[in-house]
Length: 227
Image (cartoon, rainbow, N blue to C red; front, side):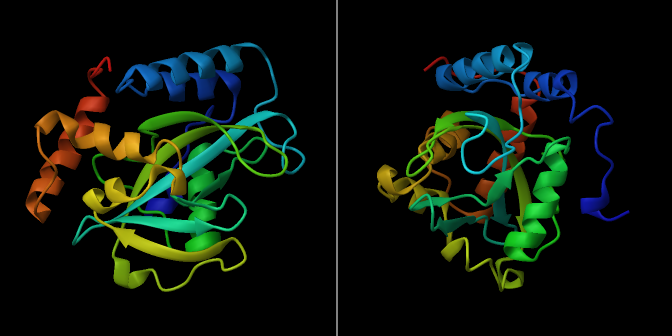
């Protein structure tokens, strides 16, 4: 069975299944705890969860992001999103009745022409969640589930030029050096909180590998900072 053919949770597209999916994410900081609570209340309200009309109907809807890591060098892939005017992880809106993991699989093929291969310690479950008000025409709120994939940067040789003006591979410290106004508003938070507990920025490849493994394991077992 290929990685992107991994079976979905049978109920992942139902409100109950999505609520369980979100509950499986351990809050890393106060902001994520607030976003998880907002998401739980939104799902429980019975409001529609999927976008049905571009760009803003309903005003809140589900998105799947996928953070692609270059396995040899542990760099992060960012895309220059034309409509958002920001550097973001790839991803897309979850279609009606679609498992959010299958959104990752579909978007990885459509946007980057790659197979969605989950990072071994992350699997095909989300590890981070954000609630974000979008910029530009038709502003709305994206409830985004963040997944992590692995890929060799040399194998990512094409991208959807209609959606993206370009792509970049950046080390975590390079992401943190980018002006926050040019990125997804939670990307600095994600990078910073992912490695802050070790007291210094990740240095070499082995250091990065150890930290990522610790991060994925810890997020599935206990919560972290209250900042």
